[in-house]
Image 1 (cartoon, rainbow, N blue to C red):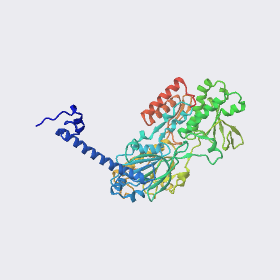
Image 2: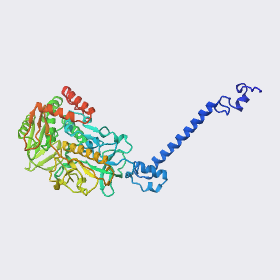
Image 3: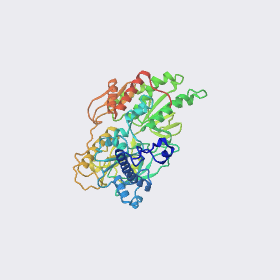
Image 4: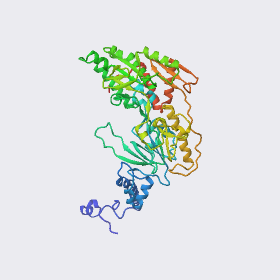
Length: 541
């Protein structure tokens, strides 16, 4: 055989053909040829798979009008495989109904105490969870008053929903939707929703979409009661959300700093530094106690020029802490008065930008007005086509079901027992809502395991025992390391009731253990420790 010249030795040979051992040569070694062939086949198979997945995922989003898939995952994939564009085009702008083979979907409205506890204990191996709420976190409301004056940081009392129920951020069929429900269609098993974007600049305009459900749970809470008094909504601040506490803190510190600026009159300085709290329930008393403690320990040290102008007034129409023992109520009054809180019994008739008017004609100027007179049914709850209990709440039976409406439940402050049950409407307390959420989670898990998880499932399911609430007691702090603990089961029953430093220690210990996650428990403990050693943070951010 004639030996060929090396391609490297001849420019002509280099241009004519590649080296024998080059992968581009047809004379490559057998094992290399086999490897290249296998890699080409694997790449081709991978490209076909990616193309099929992309077609399934993108087709619903293309034909739908919403921000996410208009059909359920299985239905969208089946329609895409079948090339049924008509099915996709008429799909809902939102989440369509589940189909056979998919997990049933539980839609929860709200991330309060009831809704969060329900989602925490719901069995996500058998259910998909979709939460619709204007906020993506739960607020530990008993400690919210402490954030207004810097005792705690805001992050310490906000628990992200993804930590409470990880499925909403991990499971393919579970979602958290930043929106609020606007209407319900029980016959079609769908709800109408609208995205929440208020308070943000240069953001998307709100849009509407639908969500189909197999089980629907109302846990949307209640709203602050204003009793129709003019000016309350416009000029008062409600202490119910984290942004309320942030607004109170910013306004309080702003008034303190402005009162130090030269050129302000004596009367205006007294008005700016007058903090008025309306409502003598636990929230109002705890905020008044925290505020007075803040004034005594921090304001008088760091704002010494205006320390004599700062005052707190608590206005209540009846008795403060009316659900507590008489002895504890008197102890609270004495402690508040010692702290410099002025107690006024009266009814607010009108609220103006710089003053409020009582029923006896007295005018009370204010620089900060906090409204905490209790809660009532929201306008959305009142508009729902469901039977109502006392006060306009959603009426439920002993199993927290909405009668005559299949697959619909209600928990928390938005619901109450119907008169036909013979039970009284439970108070709007965190422990009531949490207990109802836990009970309903167990009930729904039992229904799912019996095969009745899907909508309109005609399955005989033993729902178990009826919901029974037992009151565990009430606690409230009045500032200066003092608190009240009332462990009676009802207002008229006998039981343990203590006050003082021991109660304050019990109050802090109990709430520290009730904080949802270890992360926030650590935050709260560190905040309490740093506040005790270094004082409160008074920077206005």
